[in-house]
Image 1 (tube, rainbow, N blue to C red):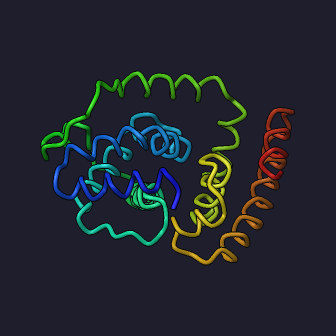
Image 2: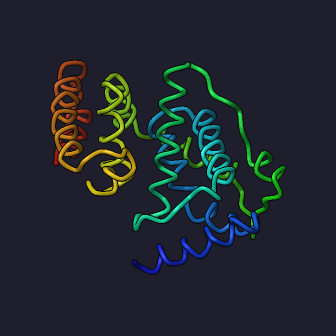
Length: 206
């Protein structure tokens, strides 16, 4: 077990007794989960809500979390992935916020400007048209391909980590990734003749 996992394990155990300890886990993984939900939804407010809901559910169920020699972040990504799937399935999302966490007795250990993070993320989306093109193409793929492609190339997760997050065999993840990339490339080439979209697709394929 590496240092980060050991620290996470200690924090999780502390969080089961003292919700304030959850603040360090929140600060450590908030950016990662927000970026992931933002890349999946392309909407800042929805990403913000889903991220808050992810941590709200993590805190709510922290006492049921048990270690199986996998990163704590994998659990967070699994919750976020389920919340994203629920959003697209229902077309609605529950509006959560950090205030919901605080209402359960949780507070951040240090000042953390969430709105500043949201604004920065929104600016990134506006500046990268090639990402927007690719994201729209990914969004049109079946959910199973969206999950593996986003986790692998935008969340920078390894195959074994994705397998843990999605609770699927590594062989299945590799197969989904291969087929998903082929479909993505075909879609991008068919719907966009711009140089930027082609270059971005080639990068993803690599």
